[in-house]
Length: 496
Image (cartoon, rainbow, N blue to C red; front, side, top):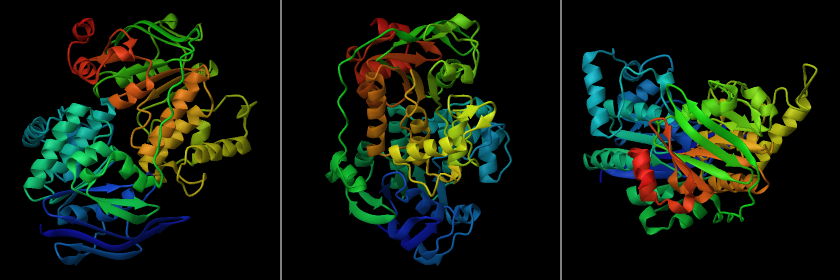
């Protein structure tokens, strides 16, 4: 293999955080190189150096055997480096095609529309170039990022958690594309917390912990547990689910019929975790919006919370009934990027006991709550007064989930709970969801991660083109039958 990229002794510090500590990292032509580490280990910072988004404090970049500087994203692209970011760099009010053209520095027209369609079909990542981005799910937005990067014909392609919102079938299609790019002599950097994917795809991995390189290995020669131990220093072990102690129905949805959804029945009892499986773009966002009160149901009794007809209540009123909500999109929906962690803690606590009284905000309690969330969920940060947008994707996810779980809500609606978090943090979040249900809360988990659903859910149902199947005990499903139901005729597959 011929050398393509070498990073030598790269160091980058932020206030209170040494993100990269003398990191050495190299990628050869014709290889898919995994970059691994827990949330906050320094992976994203290192890739921001490569993509021209941040300047290292010291160290050297060698590109094709020549010393290089990368002062901007434009300079990175000019060298032949493309990146698929974990946080989507998209304008919601523009179309798919306009976003892709803007990223490539071109004009969107008929020729580029055809290129987008051809590229997306070739890679099994279907896109409508004329669709407005704000109407799309996180999975569909991820497809835009991937197709846009590939249209730039990069020699080195960096993928930061590219499969976090893809189904197994979509991920397999993407892997075929990555292997083709590898065989063409390109270099690829693959960042993922899905270690079995890394083991199947990569022959070399560099592992970061605390900003330092702690190991290199061939992932195929290690178990996922061995790799995780190198990443976090210990071997994570999930907590087994306790026996169910079901109580009364706490969340009950009946005959929710809209332009986007057809939900004949969906209920969650106290002490129960119900999972909703589905391919991205099949109505998950709409379902979440109606359950959280961001969209109002046709009538009040369509959604009942603890026996109260709440279908016409907004999010604050539903929270007052003991509910909590975790949306799929971290930045802009669950958190305001330019607000501090303290301010973001307050967002979902306004009007609740202790946080606000007679119009006055209890800032001391809000700060304590933010600190408690960060400590309890191992959120790596430079201080709770820092911007939410400064956190890595995984750390922001831990903060958002922890902010809601720490309230011990009676009803929790969570969409993609472990998106972008490392194995140890994912186990912690799932353990906390189990503990919440065991304490008597009703938990609804919307997820595209089938392993996650099988681990958590007592009962499962499938959302397909906005239609929700009947719930069945998780033991009645297999990965195969669930996968088919997610992509086929729900009623036919469930009946079968």
